[in-house]
Image (cartoon, rainbow, N blue to C red; front, side, top):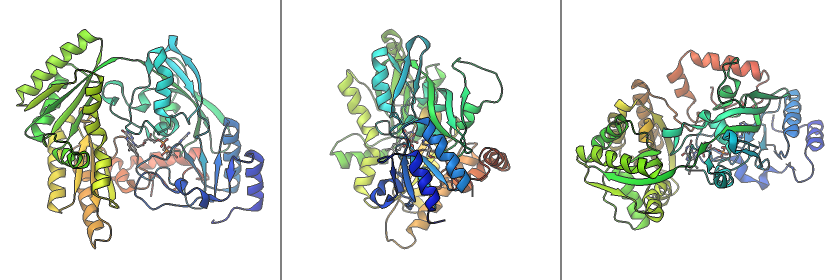
Length: 459
Ligand SMILES: Cc1cc2nc3c(=O)[nH]c(=O)nc-3n(C[C@H](O)[C@H](O)[C@H](O)COP(=O)(O)OP(=O)(O)OC[C@H]3O[C@@H](n4cnc5c(N)ncnc54)[C@H](O)[C@@H]3O)c2cc1C
């Protein structure tokens, strides 16, 4: 379908008042894409919900007319997850952006799905609480979108990814019913876990209209940097630190090539060797002792440098190196397509996987960046494909696929935190085999007319 019927348009107008609906999507090109470099897709209409009842009514309308709906938070996905489905409409949740109830005594918060991650934490800070995962896109990404993708981030090592914090959800189902899943108790064994089924479902099983999250007490933080001669030594240090019993707030590995790009981009002079960035969370006496233990672990593996940030400003400067990687690659390789690797492997395979990825890129002469949440075995591996160079796309895809298949053979996953979207469908099957059919059955049971983001995840 490439046109909406007059009856359907009238139905949309009945649900969404003036200003809440656009039938001229050409005026909103940002809604045609996400932050991947995949092909944009124009929707037939865009609706902005302000209430759960509108979401439910829209799904009922779309279900009856068999019109696809793609839920959208901030559209910062990296795999095409929030690119509109062909012949469908976009439902934006960005106006459902209220923090409804902070419950400090319960370490919980109730909120709407369009609340931006950093804004939530700004509102929680006076209560000495925070929502922990820490995606690097936290200044833009919405909590609804984090649930859609089961987002992770810098602090997931210590506190878990999004799914470890979501305890209750209000969900609009494909048929237009509006239900609550889960409980506000911190543990439950009552029935199938429908909340967890929703997390990471990429808007394909229902649309989240209200959320209850569990929270953590805001810790004090210490930041340190360690540098090594080889990536193997850096990866071994990750293992040594974790085996002392410390669970760092963050433990990131940055490959020498990333530091090289950031040095050029920012005019810095960081030593271009494999680097670990760490954060230790807790009360000061505890973090002092953790820093000393981590320092000893790094030095025992021949660290060439161990630097402890003396204050907040210095900590921010150290983290800036990590945060500038994607800006640097975009500035140095303008107009390049980015093939976004987001693998995770068991910790014992981390060093070998990084080594393999580097060699695979070098063998094909493809520029690449490698960095990641080393503490939980996650490697972001960006293969940069030049525009208009014959054969470059095929070469890039070969490198990208080789790295993913290496990770799968090592017992890992194709996506640690970005989801499958449009870009990684074939690897979902390689990872899960026949279990993908169980996923399809769940999809069919909850969305028999296949209207919810229907072109994602499965071929
Ligand atoms: C610079 C940059 C850094 C990033 N860093 C990280 C990182 O550190 N960790 C990480 O995990 N990801 C990261 N990402 C990826 C992305 O930001 C996250 O996946 C984020 O959680 C997406 O949020 P969003 O609001 O943009 O969601 P969107 O892209 O709008 O949507 C994500 C998915 O959820 C669905 N969805 C949206 N809202 C709802 C809802 N209310 N109910 C049901 N489904 C819904 C959508 O249909 C889509 O499938 C990064 C992206 C960028 C551009």
